[in-house]
Image (cartoon, rainbow, N blue to C red):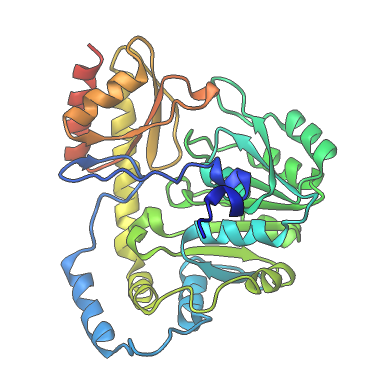
Length: 358
């Protein structure tokens, strides 16, 4: 019997395209907001004994007890806020949307923003409401968000803070205004918190329906895939029912515990990235033919004014420099996003960018 996908799969699944990850080799990789600095050798050596002693024939600690304690201590998580880890923030976003996926449910986010909110909602079968940011400044249009909340009553609102791909850090009072208006959960995604030093974590203590997402990927842990959901116990307990057992593997738990015990190394790297962001942005402002947007993250968004963004992207790729073309959104016409790399990587990018704009 020949059975086709058309017979079994939902139409919205068949219409989707798989999330595309470029196969990059021997390139200066500035497309994925990764920390450009590798783990130092002395830290790698500290991993050897715990890894040698690990029982790989046994399942990992399903609750990641030691990791929870280390995370709490390292990031000063207040008492009364509970934690749940995921295989990256993506798994946690999926769990959140799955939990509210009733027939009449919808989620709300702004646009442009992190694409996985919409993509995950679509393959779960949850309707997505998108409210545009203001053109040019990418600021929150709180009146439009309020109108959308009253009209659609979203079960979840996702706000990336700072926002990806714009790097915008909205005023806290605007975010809290949306929290006050929402009859559902408000999820504040702080993936880029290390580079902004601004957090909405205190909102959880004032508003029971606020959740915060964190990830360690941007700090230098991208290969370990660890995300964290923070919120009141009443909510985290429910979401934990959807978490697959043993979702955080032994290697991730051991490695992250060692890294958190040596967090000063990664804090230093974060400061270096922030300083390099300042230098990169300043240099880009001196290049004609582009518009550079302020950033509170570890990337910089810019718009090409004369040469099409796709052309600049391809010219950079020909010189083995990979950045991200984000021009698929109307508000991001001719926009590209570059990760803040090392000083050498940034200089190579700047030289290639100048040549690509001619």
